[in-house]
Every structure is written in structure tokens, then in C-alpha cells.
Figure 1: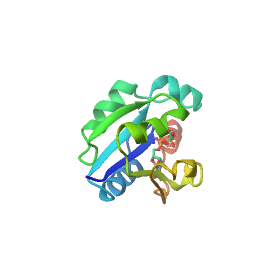
Figure 2 (figure 1 turned 90 degrees about the vertical axis):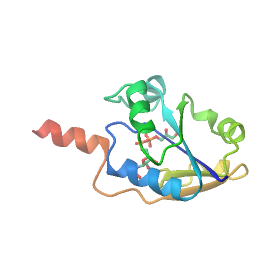
Figure 3 (figure 1 turned 60 degrees about the horizontal axis):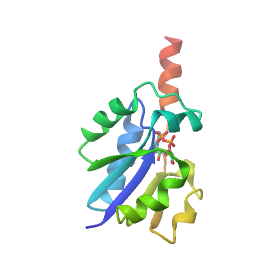
Figure 4 (figure 1 turned 135 degrees about the vertical axis):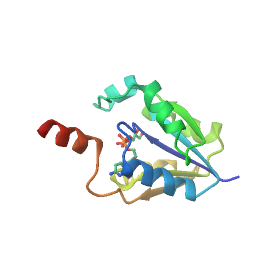
Length: 129
Ligand code: C2G
């Protein structure tokens, strides 16, 4: 069984998130999403609209997602890859190169981001009313 992992905040789920989850799942048989906790979001200077628990419920309802684990630190990725026997790490290409240090442990693939959509764009568009 080929196991894939991806990391993120996944707040206000949108088509860009679904596209990365679908493509990540298509690369294997089992997809784990390491979901940024509310406190880890603080270190990322992000404030999610939905709490970790709400974002977890939403992700677990998506057909491509097989398991959701908490992302608490930048440093947990090697341990996650070893613990869950991960074959492929998939991220959007805004992260290109930043996870290459994981190549000794698993394949690292960066996929093109979905254009013209982001959680911050949604917030900005709503704010403009
Ligand atoms: N994404 C995408 N297209 C978009 C928006 C997001 O492909 N239009 C991808 C991102 O590249 C990322 C994933 O969706 O791979 C989740 O995006 P975020 O929730 O913004 O996650 P991020 O803050 O990038 O967290 O340790 C890694 C970090 O936790 C990644």
C-alpha cells in the first residue's frame, strides 16, 4: 500500500485544497493529512476561522482523506514519515524546495497550486462585501 502525506491548515476548505488532496490521493492508496493545530497556526502567523476540531471534522468528510493527524511543529515531518511508513510527501509548489531535506526518507512532490483561490482571498472578498 502506497502511503501519501500532506500538511496544511486547510481553513475555509476551497477547491484549491480539494485539488491538492485529490492529486495527492491519486499518487497512492492512503492519504494522511497532517492538520496544523491552532497553536501551530500561531507560529505560522495564521489565524484559522475554524478550530482544529472543526477543520478535522471537515477534512475527515472528504473522500480523498483516510486519516487526519495533528501538525504541531515544523520538526515532526521525519518522525511522521517513519511512524506512518510514508512513501510520498505532497505539497503545493509554494513550498517548492523547502521540504527537499525529506528526500532521504520519502519521495517529495510539489504540485502546482490552484490559481485564483486562497483562504485569504475568500476573507478579503467577503470583507469587501
Ligand atoms: N493549496 C493549493 N492551491 C491553493 C491553495 C492552497 O494547492 N489555491 C495547497 C497548498 O500549497 C498546501 C495545501 O493546499 O499544500 C494547504 O494549504 P494551506 O492550508 O494554506 O497550508 P499551509 O499554510 O501552506 O501549511 O508544514 C507545512 C504547512 O503546514 C503548510
